[in-house]
Image 1 (cartoon, rainbow, N blue to C red):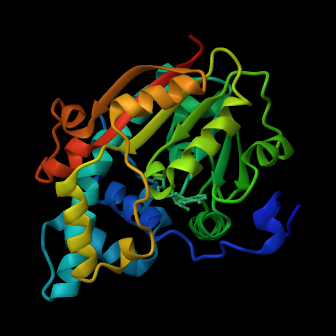
Image 2 (cartoon, rainbow, N blue to C red):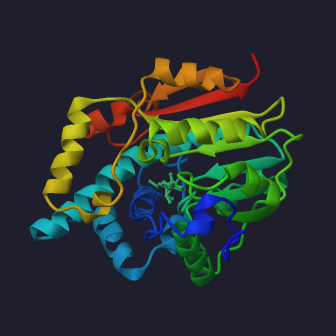
Length: 303
Ligand SMILES: C[S@@+](CC[C@H](N)C(=O)[O-])C[C@H]1O[C@@H](n2cnc3c(N)ncnc32)[C@H](O)[C@@H]1O
């Protein structure tokens, strides 16, 4: 076990050290920008803004006011947060609803980033939550939560530092008190694209080994799209330092994802793109390519 509570090869050799995730901050900014502005009554995240630092909040305020700043770099940052707000709304609404309908006494949030559910979803009052994330990102979140004085609404929150690329997820969850004999709701939002196919498979194998009957997996992933890949490359070339350090490594067609999940004992019951999920919501859909390629799937354990 490493100093930060990690087990496995990564903790031993000190490899895969990196900075806290900046895309986690971007998604949080997106939710903060949309709170009270889009899909009111269906979407809300009043906790997101509290986790942001002053300079991160400034661009959120510009997006909320609809006042783009002058200057190329500033405008790129503004457009990133605006686009992220568009994506965050249908993704959050679909996932929150899936978590309500698949509630269990255990929720494991994989690659939690600045996820606020344990601090805002009253439905989690009888649920123990494990927040699993890369050690650097988790440390950053814990500092932000402390600065905000945020108190969880979930029954409990346990922080489990895991690098999916090198650490043993199953051992880390066992050490953190997760019960593999009781049903678990697994949430994997906004993380799969940042992992290689092998890392996605290994993570699924680890969680499948701790999945009791009655469990569910709520998953957000990216479908392949040449247009979306070109857009992301262009954003990087134009100088967005946010996505530069966190490249996408795997995209999955719905068919391949369903087959992969079936291999690990999960049956897909819903799998929709974000554009479809956004349609019934009162929310902007300017970035159709991004929305069309982001997906939210729900899969149940068992045949
Ligand atoms: C775009 S953020 C998404 C955060 C959150 N799930 C959300 O949707 O707001 C990506 C998250 O994946 C985590 N992540 C990426 N690669 C990882 C790895 N190898 N091990 C653990 N976490 C990883 C990052 O630390 C970050 O928190």
